[in-house]
Image (tube, rainbow, N blue to C red; front, top):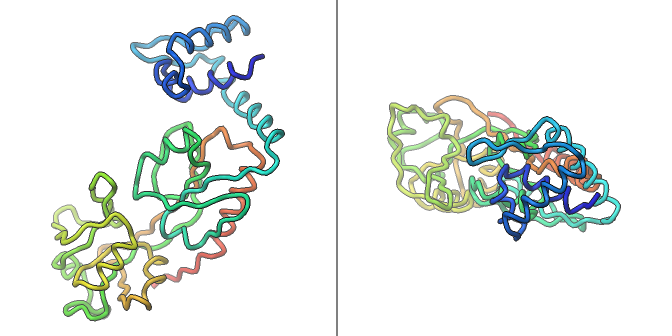
Length: 285
């Protein structure tokens, strides 16, 4: 069987749209349709049914998806002995990993849904992030969790660890994390009381920007404990338990299902998981 038909089939499955699959592969929509008709003729099976403007997979197509993905993975393993993977991770995870001959690192943008598109389009091979995903095309595995804390500068005129409470938390100005669309991505958002108003004095697109701003100004910030501890001494920060309620942030290893059985990718995942867990030196308050 023509491997191009299998690859095209998997892309159509990914998007469940001939038009979007054509855009992804850089061909015309009729070319995609013709390829799928040829695959149906070769197998004597119906693979897709129309439902409105979209298509749905038949039971045969559902059965084929994991088999075809595994077959392509085996072929890739045979062709590529030493793969160089692209790993995209969050700021808290970045310092725990060291690039090796098998992978290179880049820092992930804050809460960017484009990361899933990067995985889908082979721009990156693995993402370490707190980004939630329920898309069935991706595997999402929890690697570690750590507490969310509040930071302020050591010389803050109103805040000390012994007296910090929720009233003080809501009375102060905050430096808030935002994404590239300038939408708030406050890591402690789930902690906040919906009846209270958070006073936002400044926004930043990175945790590094947050700790630098908080170290110079009388603002509070919410961020993971490990990142706060990394900068506590050099920037003279106070680290305070979150006064709302205790909650952890989870970091996931996210990758496309096509790589699930890829031997080199499995080795990469084991290495990344080991490095992250081994270097996690977080103590609860």
